[in-house]
Image 1 (cartoon, rainbow, N blue to C red):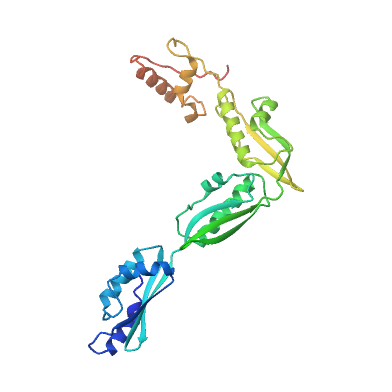
Image 2: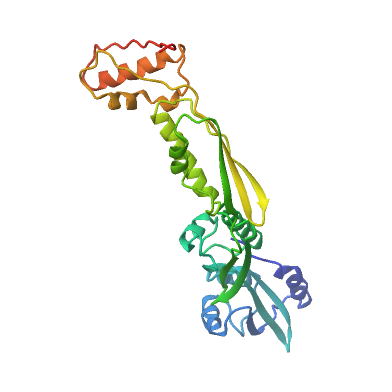
Length: 317
């Protein structure tokens, strides 16, 4: 809570000049608040017109006013008024976000954009923070294939201190995927890889959709036995006039075939899951011990306390 007590910087000299008698408050004014709010504020403070000016009463009044609304700051000041003084409470309203809205966004819906933001309705209105949100929205549209997107921030007052914040989006023309080049050791047929990626020439170059497709491709490669498969970040080259080419390097690595001998209790798929191969994608003679331990633990938790597992690696098979 922040309460301004700047009042006493000039209040004390005024009291001193009044010798020992406290000046009488002839009038109390409120600035910075709606007229309809003034009667409530008057009734809430322990001081009234006609009372002698007392420091503790003014201090308490400042605190009470501050606590009664969306107030960023409350100050009290005095000035001569006839044979007494005028006591003025100056209130600065706290600006807060009453509503967040979006216009012009066709590719990314309002709900998805709101989830990107670090602010929400009810938060304080901080211009620097809102500017960072504007930049985040721009980056989101650029990743979705709109390199020339523009986002304008507008605000309009709503009620007492509330502000409607609107992000006005102009997507402009999308970047079109011209071609996809696959390089490296693919591991799978090229047609299957292109189908899994989910993008084809002529589509909007949506990097979010591309990332999801590459995650799916890596999972498929590992499911097919390419446990060491790696897909580095794709290379995107703009070719002018809103078009771009995409080069993907796929490093499938060697294919691992798993064979379970002596197992009669569980299907092979269940045993593969228990190995958690994603934790040891590179199978070497050094990592076999960890795999043996996981499989033994699986059997023992399923009621086979004397199960033993021996792993053999045949790199020539």
